[in-house]
Length: 449
Image 1 (cartoon, helix red, strand yellow):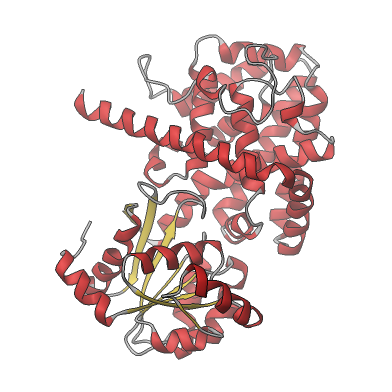
Image 2 (cartoon, rainbow, N blue to C red):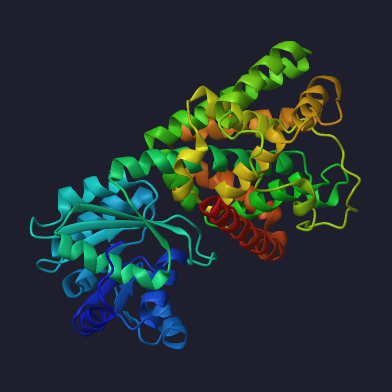
């Protein structure tokens, strides 16, 4: 990490202006943190929001100057961050990129960097430098200790050091990558995770179930599934659509996830226990085989019991096939992905999902019980069918590349669950805080052994 001395940073604050084009949730997070750290910040959003945004910002962030559009921001700012939807990045950069201040630095906050970088290269003047960023978490997560990717695509070391010093006020964990590495890693750590929990939400919606009100969805693993699914649906649809649709690596992984789900479900209903066992155990060896017998598990069912959205009594867990977890580990195996390779770039949701999968696959006897339930117990069979169909629906939406179709599907399910989002967000934050502390404790233990 190359953070400039505090004296130099203070001097830069006096002569550098930071501009943010797109003051949605993440843009506002950046604007607030930069402004609170003493940087001179300006920004804009869609022109029709100008008056409303200017009035609201006067009370919450009075030191952030609001402009009608990106022309003003581009002409004035020394570092400009495009915090816009991935589907709109090319259009917006084409509008405002040519007006960029002489010798300024430009970056973006989209979840897929290939189209972002291509737009910068196409529309920015040759004198403009490119240093892009991506905070690997949502806007309601504390930035402290979270991964922050920094991409030095076209810039001097001096300009990159300036951007890194600016970002230091977030207190995130800096990870330096190329944009190609970023897209591969984010697909590895996010695409299938999102597909799994989007599919859960759609399956519950299609079967008209609020799982926290249903006794069979009881237990720590179920709590984690429900909380993560609700957290995803409480966000804006474009947060996930951009990564899924614009990233070719994500297409491949989401398609494989649907394929794994269908194939495992087919073995379940055909009562092919031996074939299913062989496949799942091969996936376990490939994904978790390197951990060793004395590996300290990140999570366990008892720990997750406390994060329930419902009032179902603990300790009365119904056995479950956990098709969603079997499928994600199988898809990692089929794609030769070892999720631990990218743990430094993982989102909080990914860490929870990895921890739950690790618990299911590495707790003695639990995976065998899961496989037995999958082929012999029909209590979850209709739910598994709904999940299988939902995973295929999401895969088709991504393959079509239709943002409107993605939006409609997401928002229809979002509407079904929205009354639970405030409580789910609070519970999810507590769970994420616990996970991060356990990750930190495990890393600390690893360095002292």
